[in-house]
Amino acid sequence: MIKKKPDIRPSEITSLENYINRRDFIRAGAIAGGSLLTPAALAAVVPDSRRATLPDVGSSQFSTDETPNSYDDITTYNNFYEFGTGKDDPVVYAREFKPRPWTISVEGHAEKTGTFDFEDFIKPFDLEERIYRMRCVEAWSMVIPWVGISLAEVVKYLQPTSKAKYVAFETLNDPAQMPGVRRRVLDWPYREGLTIAEATNPLPILAVGIYGEVIPNQNGAPIRLVVPWKYGFKGIKSIVKIRFTERQPKCSWNMSQPREYGFYANVNPNVDHPRWSQARERRIGAGIFADKQPTLMFNGYGDQVAQLYKGLDLRRNF
Amino acid sequence: MKTVQQVRLIWKPAVFAACLLPFALVVGDLFEITGRLGANPVEEIMDRFGNWSLRFILLTLAVTPVRRISGWNWLARFRRMLGLFTFFYVLMHFLTWLVLDQGLLLPAIIEDIAKRPFITIGFMALVLLTALAATSTAAVRRRMGRRWQTLHNAVYLIGFLGVWHYWWQVKKDITEPLLYALILAALLAHRLWWRFRQPK
Image (tube, rainbow over all chains, first blue to last red; front, side, top):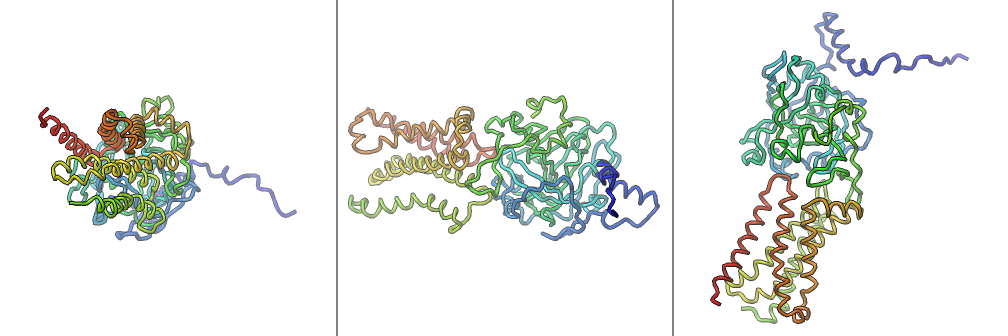
């Protein structure tokens, strides 16, 4: 017999941790080697034109194999109150919105603060497709093929100091471009936040694309947060500010109705919204006679995130 | 002036057809003939029937004030039809929720009616409206005598419950329920003003 049974499986050679951090490894190697040539695949580039194809998009082990929703469903049924409170408002009223040029200001307890051009902000990272379930607090859900950069890598890159316990985000507040902010439906600008532990978990991404293309305005162009185990409203859109804070940051929906929307907002079928049940969800695109499906704890991402909340009473910290 | 014949043969069928339009449009959009229902058709159908329920109850309640102000007494002949269309759209709204949204899942339905106040309120409105619809024929009206009017005064309570149901269901932007509430309040105010204006 020539065929020899391999006595080491590939997974034993590369640990999962090293696999996940392989880009760091490569980058560290490149720096150690004193190479001035940065490999192209390591620089995230987002073309400045609508629906342009994103170059060099990697895949991810975190992607679900569920069938993604249609491009139409994902881009015409949106909650983006800056462009109106109706689900079909953003696709109409965000049409003239200009997502480029764009700057992001980084503030607070971090080594690297200041104002970054969008292009420079994303350049150190690489683009990955992440096909995630998205569960809205209104009890509907979708599967969305995002393209983005890992938030954990961004946070690491910005080097938060030991004082940084939370990361706060803010959306652009521009009445000239966003008709929805001319009315005080929420206390603008839209604000959201995560704990540092949540932000450095491998799941959250800053998304810049959908279906391999530049993200449409109504979905939060040019850059928005995606945290798949939390209700959709945590996924703050069109981000202009990132701040590292010591105290829990204020979050828009929590400020607006604290009894109904918590800071954590983890998907949890056992804790109902005061006005409706969270036990089941309607999968968009399933057809009008499809039953609702049971909602999963942490939206089915418990293996990756449940340890973040050990010892925390999720009924009180909803 | 409209003659009885004109009202019966032309105007009633025309108004009947117009009242059916929102329903026809839902069916047309469902099959993508007249338009589309969007990414979440169940929610869209439920919202449209709910909205038309409120519009129809306000239309029904507007008949008497408009008749008094304009002197168009023939309007009274459409009041029952509008009231019954209110019931029709409320029933469609309820059935959409029961069958398409809840999938006839009894435990979930009972839990929602018992535990979610905005659903409890909507359900109460439906029960009351069913009583009004069941007693809407001329024969029953004659048989009930004075009690008929007492029962049918509940239409204001139903309108109030309906608007409250909508208000409570809305996540944040209360513009539309507020608009319905203002119209309902104006109609009720006119009714009260009329009553106390009349000499004994």
